[in-house]
Length: 200
Image: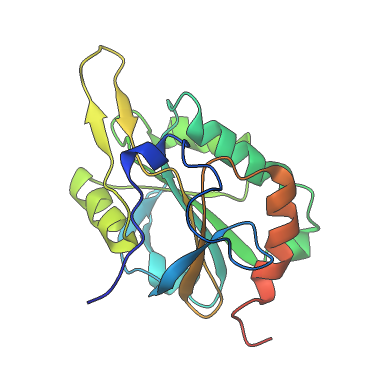
């Protein structure tokens, strides 16, 4: 049976820190129990085009994150930390990998809202959306906890996985990065991730 890396709701809030799973050697991410294949799912770009995740990102370092623009803390902090590093990279290096943000709140995260929100962090981030069924299928394919909506208040919140999934050039995930990974850690790890598990 394929093993997947699923974080509990306590971990989603960032409470786990760096005291849980074993760190992946000289990387700041956590080593997965075993490598998992790049998942297959299809969503829609902000321009309205179909995006086959496995086919479009094959052979490339890919950072995948599920979240939403109304998130009060996890999503903006995570994207800001990644964007602070990616925006400093030379354009040739930035073109070597993809950062993909999948909304877990398609009702509010329209292309008109999600596009400018992502651009604040890095204009090269690929934003994806889809139907509720498609987004659930994508999260299940990635092996993470499926997001759910809390309608107890008028301005609802969406509880979602907080980790960044990293797919290496060998089309497998070997590590994941929890909420709270710092800019310095992303800056140190991205060059390593480009060549690790790639055959270079």
